[in-house]
Image 1 (cartoon, rainbow, N blue to C red):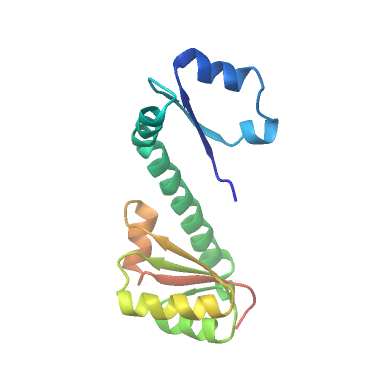
Image 2: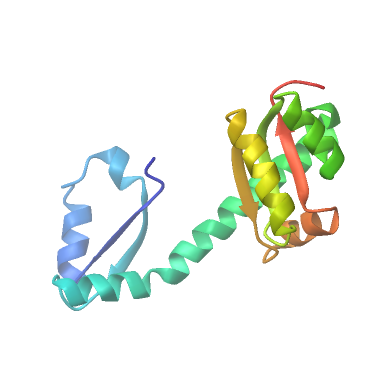
Length: 153
């Protein structure tokens, strides 16, 4: 699934490409960055990758914040549709109730691997979140293991 497009090139070329509508609207709406680079050869591509790191990191942080805001909203408004802590999350995984497993990147690696395997077995998505945001740090301090459920258990 396409999450975003970075467009790079010399100033007039990349701007004309975007502004002159060489891309369909749905693709244009996915543009997350315009990056000025010197050339359009292999060295230009390397320059694009290097200059896009900050944009991509920001996109990941935004994704994590939205994900955890959704999780905390479930905990607050529909607490029976979310789990927090290892034991409750494991039980929900065993019942096949987990829609999305959320783990802090600081979770014990052996435990993390076990929970990911359980999630994979029931077709749940797995999200690993950092502690670089306030929400991620709060999640870690609450145990670093949680889930949004498909149904109540």
